[in-house]
Length: 253
Image 1: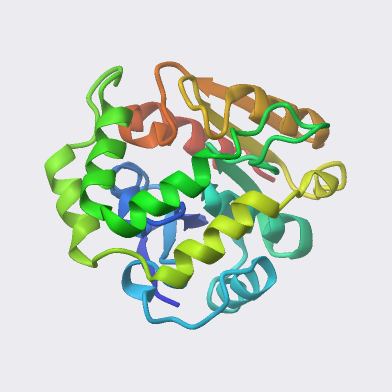
Image 2: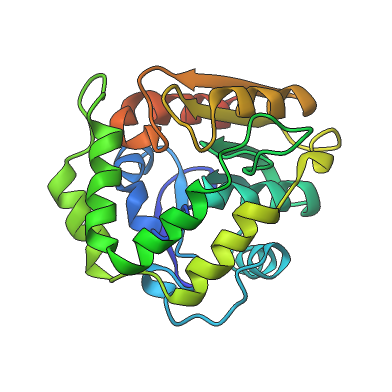
């Protein structure tokens, strides 16, 4: 599994979302590298790990990352949040948890009204597999159009994300299954480390209500809604998100 290391300071593992790669964090890396040592993961089947055969399942991926990284704060965005949360609940070396637009459960259910509509994820999987560049363009535009303050430069970020090509088909299939079936709410009350839950105000995949509900179940947890933010608030509001992350890490024991 490809893990790029850069920066100086306390260690932070960054886990990207479904269908993308670690390069999506470029705006955060630019703002955090002077303060933190960043371990930027490309999940199996994505980016520079497109040929990695590790199953895209929680214990396999989490244990592989843990073997290659020191004790650290783990930060997961979207699908990456499921891996980060599983790590925080099961590994002794996780000092803190940051969940960006990520919930313990993404799918709506009888006892979980905060999840997304069931039809949204399969449609997104189809679009990622058949029209990757166009889907990426639409995703970036949606997150940047309501930016408050200077957003991430769109063209440079787009070129970085397209450089490694689309994700492997199996990564889309396995990632979809994780998003549809995973429910980690049971791990929240016993979470042994502090956690920060960052939601985008406009996000419909991982709504502010979902992240607030998750934080309410976990000890030493704080939920923050980023005004005007979409599903990737670190793109439209990178300064605010980076600032919140730096404050969280600095306050850890």
